[in-house]
Image 1 (tube, helix red, strand yellow):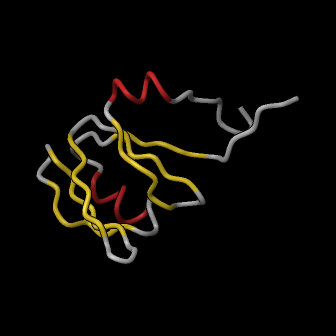
Image 2 (cartoon, rainbow, N blue to C red; image 1 turned 180 degrees about the vertical axis):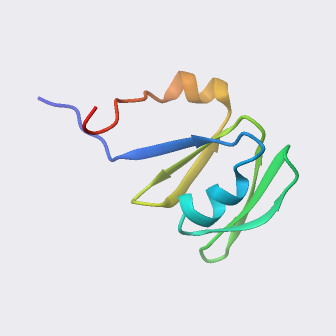
Length: 88
């Protein structure tokens, strides 16, 4: 029997891509601040929630461009598996 899962995608916050993550990579996020060390995003919802994402952490999205969570590099390596991109 096959094992299946929903599609999730990730991007690593590198201190320069906070606006890209907030403005185009996620559809439910608003950029609160980005000082190159910590990215602060407000995620739409009731109530809206603000997340602080440290430099080097991964942002994971699902259901298209919906924020799922942010994880440390160690958690990412331990709990997530990267698959080849479609068509690769």
